[in-house]
Image 1 (cartoon, helix red, strand yellow):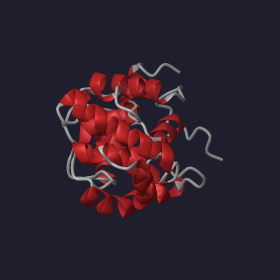
Image 2: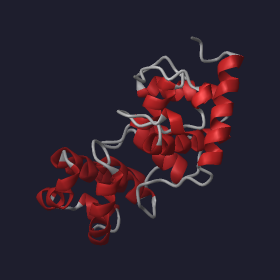
Image 3: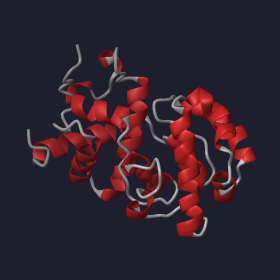
Length: 215
């Protein structure tokens, strides 16, 4: 399958049109008010539910209010505050390391380019795109576990590597559609096209979907 054919592109646009009707105003599931909080929350969300992260971050953001606070945090204390999100030692180390770089290299401000964001500890393309798209309102493609699963099932990509899937989505949609399709797929993955038991009978894009790997 070649994802750059007109057939695939037309089907992809029909899928997006329907999903935008189903989820007309999707919002990020993580709670944050600025770029730094978005960065921290997204780091915490690795291998953890957004619900759990949102339970942890209110106290975290009350204690650590800026990059200087996180940069100077005691790692053991930070670990205890984020323990319930899992992998808390590596997450605490990455948060502190990223904050130090933000203070030392970027004047205390979270950078607004992919090239600079991915130099921060714990920040890959997924986290960077989340910040760029949701906070800085730049064209960005977020490939989380839902987007990865749904793009494969829907035949929008033959790739399993998130970075390659991101490029496939960029080729299928115009840049002003990248964030809408990311959010729409994430919502659909959470609500209908679930990993273990996809509700194909309740799916409004069922007729457009090859449903690869759905048993």
